[in-house]
Image (cartoon, rainbow over all chains, first blue to last red; front, top):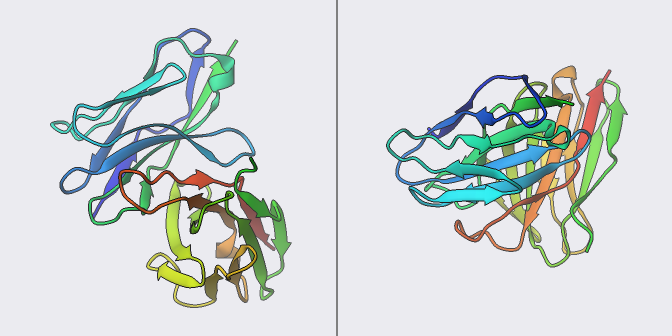
Length: 113
Length: 116
């Protein structure tokens, strides 16, 4: 079945450091891939998405590239801010469903001033 | 433009009681999804509803759990005879369509259920 694996946290960085959060997936065909962010006490917000191989999703300085050959969708940001502290979820929608989001377990990011 | 509303935000129930969670989708959205987040885990799909119809309940436990989305009013997730293992955050999401490429689900803030 479809699944998502992401690196365990917490990830602790200093402000302005480079961020990478790894995400790999298992799915047949070409799923749609997503990164969601959850700030403390809030619901999930869509951060970025990619729907086909080699697509790059980007938003608010975050980027992720859909790599079919490595079944990966790693999240990157060149310079993190304290306000980026949150839990980040990688997710997919498989080709067998148009709506069923399958989430990774989440990675908590803590950015220190 | 109000987002997805969920209430209550926090709910405490004793074992054996009923829990009723409400979700009002974004204005103009007719597709509602419920997800459950157990501690330290990702969200797991439970059920997908449209007005007056359950489209996919493949993620719902077979017993004690039910969901509805009536013609008028919010969607309701009902858990009867709660047990400690039901303690989790329950998130509702809504979308304007269910098409795979166009679908974007907007999430509410969640209801955190604690069973004592």
